[in-house]
Length: 343
Image (tube, rainbow, N blue to C red; front, side, top):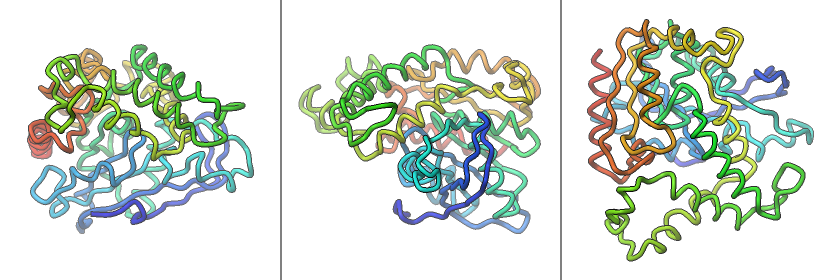
């Protein structure tokens, strides 16, 4: 597999963002796996999730697995704000010291489409697969480019950020920005206390009631709940730039497939625009993206070639969608995606 230094960059600019700001030179970091076939119809787009870079999610790209590089040409696109694509941490020079502007998922999928068309000549996607913020990007792709997307898998994600999800993210922001290094709208140095507090907030929401009640953390070798929190969550976000994290939280909170000129905020119309084979795969115990939101969305997918909701039967909360060390949930996802690719 690759390392974080092994990736390509697609540059575009100047680009006018959805909010009206002009970004002088955007960079979209990406990595590819497998070979593009002559027909250019074996492409799977796999966008990153919150705070993740391509190396964090490429575990799903495995020979013999659902995202098999022997069969498919897989493109992992790094979301803006993740430290590799344009982010507060790497854009000071190109912005000339100006504040980092607000991005949306609509901005992200537009540049991803340009990457596929301009660099690879790709105009059809066999599948877009995404988890969490990646799943929200998958939804935006399916709604904005219905004639491009054959299939979309939304794993522990939704078509818009729910009020409950928004409130969770407010807690994340409050914990992080309470650090004294946050001044005048940005962090002037690494907020160690804020990052630890953010991890503790995440720990309560990321895993389920059953996970903690049954002390599943013991299976990972932790001897106490405090050991688990300290070992798994206190440093969970320390490897990322705090200003980058805030930029991605803003993208997440503003997420809504209908929030664009094309749909004018009409959520039902946005869902009805989708033509792909849709697989909604929430985690049964996910508290970020509640399965009830996907249940509501399912009824709006009236023009999809097919639409199904298959919840991951897991007690691992939101992490059911990224089960790198959880063989049972991993097998469930692989089986579901393999079946989707047969449609």
